[in-house]
Structures are given as structure tokens and as C-alpha cells.
Image (cartoon, rainbow, N blue to C red):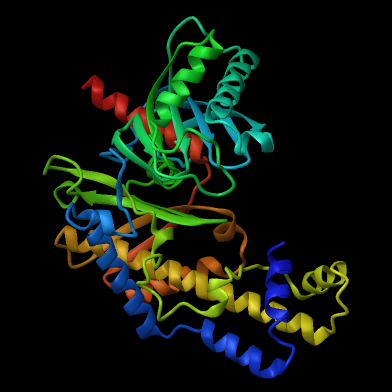
Length: 410
């Protein structure tokens, strides 16, 4: 459907003079190195604005504290339940964490089941939505023969903006994607889940942690790579988190140590900070795609459009230009993040790993390469490695709970 919307939006602009329209579009999509450097600097300024108590209220980039104080060190262990809620389907998992063996993926075992969320629950009441989640959890416990006689530690991946006052408390700021459930915004999501578990009955769970998908990705990859201190999502939406010095985060108490910050960078520019870079196509939310030429032509034919080979070439080139620009913009933001970490620590050079997840990053044939190239160019004092997440967000939530429980046991 991305190509469908893109073509219809773009094709409607080609009626008068196709050649000039294509040239104008392609020119608008092209970003020079100095422009990318400027965007990166603007984003770093927005990060500082979001971290400050004085300017946070007016900041578009909210820089939300997550109360995650450390990444895994490989010594975590235990058995955890996890819920991963963020789309039209959600997952229930049982995650067994063993002390790391040094071989990627060998320290974690998981069983999972995906449950659909009926369309009416996405826009119904929050009570009905969380009751459905709770009932699915109970179904999973019975199916996997997991004991309901003793308290089970549980972690929640909740991929929506939340203001957290603790690791297992968080007020929903606003729904996104196609979620619109009533009565949840401004309320504690963990409390909503606990209430549903109590109504369902027959379960004894303790919610230890709530994280979003960027944090979960960072934690999953951090279990295998101790240099991983950034989480990046590039899919139907994009966001990033990173480990910030605690004394830079005005919204929480304490000066010692670090805390993961959820940037919510998808809001960058919502306040007009990027107006001189916004094109008419951005305002129409022109999407990106990776379709090959034959696939493009097939889609156009399915639409009943009598397209020529030249039409298909134009659409493919436009899709390529949009995805290339998207990777550059993502790279500009990421360069700001890693360079801030380097400056925070007073280092001349920083080695760091970015845990990354999302269908666009993993499936697009060129996105990852352009992203890496852009970060290298804009943050030359940082050596940035990218580690695709293999465990999923639910695993990351469970690892967050494992880190938290280990800290409590000390």
C-alpha cells in the first residue's frame, strides 16, 4: 500500500509537465552534507531542550526518563513472563535468562504466542482492551503449563509515549498508530494491566518493568554486546533511546550514574524546527517503499492505471529518493545521539553499538548502508556498530526485569 499512496500522490502532480515535476521532487529530496550536519546539530539542541526542566514543557522532543539505570552485563538470570503490546497483534512470552555464555543468543530461551487484537478493541474502552490482554495471558499460562500457584515476575513492552515515575509505573501521554482506546490516556498503564489481571483471576503476577520497544531493543542487544547503549527502531515509525548521564536529566532526582532516555524523536520538527527542510511531499506524508520495477508496474496495473515502463521507472526512482532521504535523516539524529554520549564522557573517541529493530531497517536493501554512511560522516569521532535485534521486544522487557531484580537482590 505504500507504493499505492506514493504513486497516487505523486502521479497527480505530474499532469502538467512530468519532467519538471520529477526534477523538482528529486531535488527537494536531496540533502547535502552541510544540511545533514545542520539537522544533526538542531536535533542535539532539541535533546538538551527536552532534558531541561525549564524547557521540557515546550519541547517537541520530550526525552522521557525510563528509570532503566543499566544495560545487562551477562550475569542476569531467571524466568520471566513478558507482554509485547504495540500493534494490531501482541505477544505473550515466557523468557528464561541464563548467565551469558559469550555466544550470541545462547543465554536466552523463549516461548511465545501471538494474539490478535480485534479492531473494535483498538477504539473501544481501555478496560476491554486490557481485559483481552489479561485473558490472553491466562490462556498462555494454561497452554504452556506455567504454574499459577506462585507469583510470576512479568515485564511489559508498551510501545507508546509514557511519562514514567518508576520502572513499573507509567502514564500514557497519547496513543499512536491505530490505537484509540478510551480512558487510558493520562492513566498508569501498569495499574490498568493489574486491574485487568485481578478481574480475570486465577493468576499471580508481579509487574517488575515497563519499557518501550527502543529500550527493549537496546536491552536485548546489550545482553550480547556490552557496548550497546543505544536502541533504534526503524519500521512503520522510528524512535531511539540511549544511556544519558543522570545529572543531565532534570526531570529525575540524582546526580550519580546513568539512565536510559526515550527520545521520542519522531516528534522532531513538530514545533516548526525543520520547516525550512519540510517539502510539500512531507506535508502529505509521502511514504517510502522498496519495490522493484516489476512490482511497481504490477501495483499500478492492479490499480487500473495504464502505466508505461517510464511511469514505473519514475515511481521506483521516487521511492528510492524518499527512502535514501529517510535513512539520511535517521542517521543525522543518530549521529547527534552518539556524539552527545561521547561529549558526556569527555572522550576523544567513542566505540559504541546501536541495537536496531524494525522492518524497514532489516528488509530494505539499501537503508542500513546509507544510515551507516551518514553516521560515519557526521560523527567521525565515534565508531558505531549496528546489531540487529533477534530476540524481539518481549525479550528485552524480560531482560530489563532481570537487571532490576538483580539490583534489588544486591
